[in-house]
Amino acid sequence: MTVCRRHLARAASAVAIGHALVFAAVAGAASPSEQPAGSAAPSAGTAPPNQPAPAPPAASPQASAVVLSNERTMTTWAHPVEEVSIREGSVPASRRIARARLETEDGFPEVYVVLASVTDARGGVWVRVRIPGRPNGRVGWVPRSALGEFHATRWLVEISLGRRRLKAYYMGKLRFTAPVGVGKASTPTPTGNFWIRERFKLSNHSNPYWPYALGTSAYSTLTEWPGGGVVGIHGDLGEPQLIPGNPSHGCIRMRDADIGWLAPRVQLGTPVHIVR
Image (cartoon, rainbow, N blue to C red; front, side, top):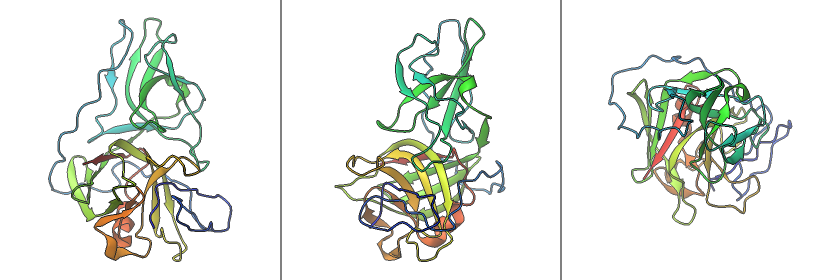
């Protein structure tokens, strides 16, 4: 069965695979890594459908926003360096809506997509970020100093649940398309604008998730699973005949050869837009 949550142990031994929404790692699984933007040259193709621009930032009257991501052809992301409050607006007195966390559920550096920046009346720089965690779809503001170096990706992954199809774009050009398995009606795959937070290369062919697993910022509707129900993109679990289809608990299944093409190319921070 597919999974919508992974519990990636960093120990050397494999973790048992079960019915739970578990993203199991095995001995030799590599930690998420970055790939330089533009590592693969774009080819001719179809431009992705227009995505809605991020909502106007909630900033102080004196601030003017600088857009850092359009989440189509350019997306900026960063690892946090401080556990600070994430606020509704770009002023310290704004309501706190979340707290930045340094690590993912699996103990790797967390990834925040950076949408825009503003400089307030006192010269302080604030950035608007997408927030991983329930409920899906939240955005907020943190001081620029709370984030490390900015990185950029030119990739976009778009998944259509109705068509059971994944498309990958680079610089707005269609580079790859593949059928996928998605969540069944009782355990649906959530829709929204998400991103890749983890990437694992699995060396053990006996692992059902081989050869790659990607952890996203999407969270399943199934709250009873330990670890929160993080939705992943992974291999076919030895059941390629179920793709395309609705065989999963909410995760995205790809045939092994297809995720073998996609995973090495897309970077951390790559937008994953899941639509009906």
